Length: 359
Image: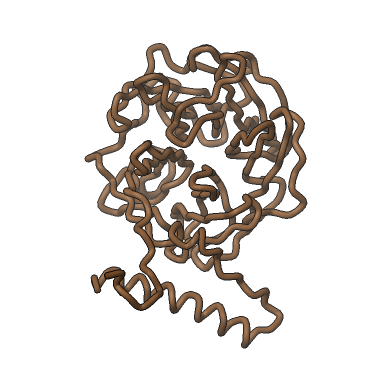
């Protein structure tokens, strides 16, 4: 048996044995259910491979709208190009007003910023355009409504001490020219991710109404009036997670839901990383025992401390690609410093438990 496969199987065995032991020793602790069989292959270690020598997007030149901060890539495929929208800002941290930038690429790795940029602003000089999400298929192809792209985003005024974040929407014919913001549609929403299933819209988002931030789910018949699920679907509970959960990115593939999400990394101060969870229904989630699955890389100075605010697509060949924002080491003058990408070949087939090799 391959050594790596053996180690992974041992790790998974130890993980679930510990769950049983904790449950017996601490009967007041809720017993963690073992993930359904259909989710098992998605909860294996994920080998994300960074395949660029540097950031795919960096801060703009002095005086540009994105010369100090940029983050929250959201990617779709329009015809034969990747469109990557992102939030960029100038100014000090407390004075940030994020606008929406656009960059395009033929291969998903080498991007050119739009000229002119930004392509969209809130319009009042105070509110930010942040953490956009679009109706699209798993491979990034947009799902248009009445011939238009539909975008949702979170917005806040960073100078307002209330910290209010709201959900807004906008429409576009071409991904460049967008309608005026409509909203707020829902309060306390940050980093929404939205899927359309039949006539129903499903959203997962970071609830920023109180600390610790958690991830909630909501449903809508029109994408405007939302019914929020009464309980969070993910809360800070795993050993590696600390303080807050944020930036859920959800896709449905092969009949299951996959979520990549961020958290502060408990073992590494001033660091975030990306975890992964899987679900059958979008409400009950099972974390990957190997979390965090995408971590900062100390050998790459531009992403040595933060890796979050991600967008993921799955190509027709089954492979995955992720785009994410990063920070370099403190002091954090730039809340986020660069945008990066990595690829993953997808889960390995699970080994049979029958005790035979299939011959």
